[in-house]
Amino acid sequence: MKRFDELPKTIKKTIRYIKQDANIKQLNEIELILNETISNRLAEIKKS
Image (cartoon, rainbow, N blue to C red; front, side):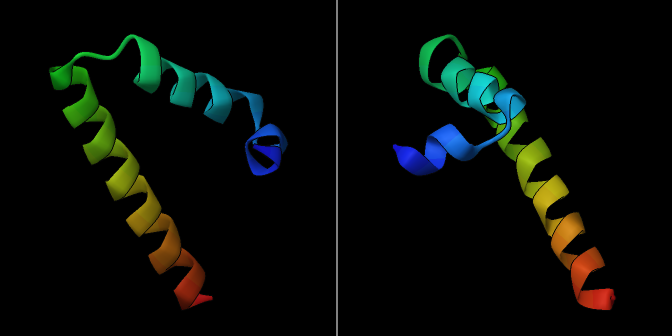
């Protein structure tokens, strides 16, 4: 849990929301957004 405590507050809130309140439709949308954002960021980092 130490790694979790080091994350930004917004990430912690998102993880808690996913674990507690998100329904299937919301989980699918969150998954798509996160995967796309992470892929874009990794591509950006690899370019530089």
